[in-house]
Every structure is written in C-alpha cells, then in structure tokens.
Image 1 (tube, one colour):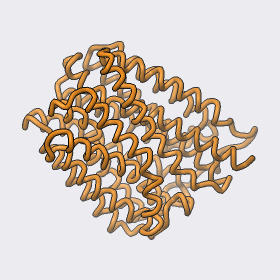
Image 2 (tube, rainbow, N blue to C red):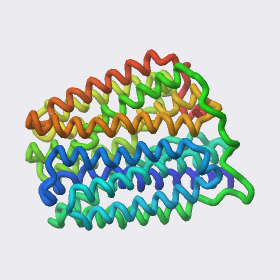
Image 3 (cartoon, rainbow, N blue to C red):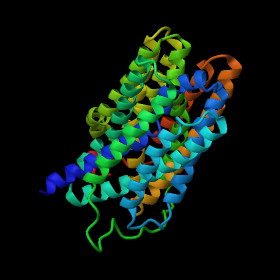
Length: 392
C-alpha cells in the first residue's frame, strides 16, 4: 500500500510539472513562429515576451523562499496549476504585445510556485516512503508536457488553425492535467506538515558556486529553448518539421533522467551536470551550424536529453551542499536560474534582429553552457551518486 501511494505521489508530481512547466512554460516555443506572423511580433518583442514569463518565474521563486507557505503547499500548488491553465487560454484572447507580456509574467509566477511547492511536497513524501528513486519520474513530467504540446501544436498546424487555437487547446489540456494532480495528490494528514521550519541557508562556498553555475545555465539553455522552432521556421522547415523537432525535444527530455541515472551513479551529480552542459552546448551549436532540418533535429534532441538532467542534478548538488534547508536552497537556485533566463532572451532577440539570424546568440549560449559546467566542476561539492539512489 505504501508503495502504491508513493507511486501515485510521483505521478502527481509528474503531471504537475507536465502541466505547469512542459505546457505552461514551454508551449510558447512551438507557438511563437505563428504568433510572430499572425500577431505581428518582431523577434525582439518575442524576446521581451519570453523574458516577461521568466521575470514572473524569478519573482515566484523569490517569494517561495519565505516561510509564509509552510503547511499550505498543496493548496498553493493546485491554485498555481489552475492559474497556469487559465492564463494559457487567455493568451489566445489577446493581440497586444504588452498584454502578452502581462499574461506571461503572471504565468511565470504560477509556474515557479508550482515547481517549488509541488517538488517540496512530493519529495518530502517520497523521502518518508523511502522512494527517492522516483524523483526521475517526477522531473520527466517536463518532457512529457513538451511532447504533448508538440502533438497539440502539430494538430493545430495540420488543421490550419490559428495560433489562438493552439493557446486555447493548451489551456484545455492544462486543465485536464490540473484535475489529474487534484485526484492523485492527497492532502496532508490532519495536523501534519511537510517538514519542520527550515533554518537560514548556511555559509557554503560549494552551494553558492553551484548557484552561480545554475544561474549561468539558465542564460545558456534558454536561447535555444525559446527560439528553436523559430530557427526551424527561418530555415523553411515547414509546420510538420517544427512539430517534429519539438516532439523530439520532449521525448528525449522525458527519457533523459532515466537514461542518465547510469552515468550519474558512476560520476556523481556534479560529474553528470558537467557532462550534460558540454553535450547541450554541442546541440546549441548544431541547431544553427548544420544546414537543413538535421541541425535543429540534433539541437532539439541534445537540448531535450540534457536540460532536465542539468536542472535535476544542479538542484541535487545544491541540496547536497545545504542539507538543512533544502526548500530554501531550491528557491534560491531557482531565483538565480530565473535571472539568467530573464536576461538572455532579450539580449538574444536584439542580437538576432541586428545580425539577421540566431547564429551569434547561439554561439554566446554555447559559451555560457561551457562556463556553467566549468564552475560546477570546480565548485567543491562533494561527489555523490545519482539523487535517485542517494535521496539528494
């Protein structure tokens, strides 16, 4: 019975991240090219809309670091999921650049709340059940959501529907995901709580080094994660190729943590983080240097197979270095990540508009990924096995 409860809890976490992150955050990528055409967004404006979402994500992470939500994690997570669903649908109602920015800002706030409070609640319960091996299942939800959004947007394009229909469909799919989480994620026992109130973050050089590396990763990954389908569109890849590239990204992201467990068990979470940064940088370069559909396909596959690995193992390394305050560590690292991903799309949008393509922004992103890996390598975090084996 305890085994079944742990599995249902992990599936609830997976559905939550699929909804708020895989769809709520990342469906913007496959819908962006059509929005640029249909709503008249320029590439620099697209960068601002993407960054507005990331500003909300940053603010949400900062707010989540406080103790105000102690014992209310489930209510906040479910409310955030509902808000994310409604905001996705609301994107299809507007046609104004500033309105898009406002909606995506609030959606970013909701996605950060969902990530922090869902993972806090779910991982606490998995730890109590001795089933931290199910963490990979939870994080794979992001890839599942991306894969589902690629199928959804592919159907929209095949039916020659507008980008608005894509947002409406995304909202409906997100509502279904919210219902799944509501049914699977049980309330805490009466009088129970997730954990004792956490002490302040300790002074830890390894933690702050990993936080810096994680923030730089946020800037390095987001250029391709935001503009990959726009790169396909610029190469005249066609609607089906756009959906196909995003599907490859989602499927590889869904499988990535399960595959990387073998490597992480050998080299530890930091070693896996470093290797994944190197591989993702190669994918970023491939997306803009290899002509035709091959480059973006390789870029999507390497992005999908690494970005959730870097996310999960980066956060795991932070928790290893601050075992007494895991939720605060998660929130602070998420905030650092948010700063990186706020600045990068704006800069990339302007540079792409100035240079007439995404080559230069992608070169910069690849350098940032390599820098992130180098800082992590020298962070001083003690080696540890995969978080799915050691409960990190």
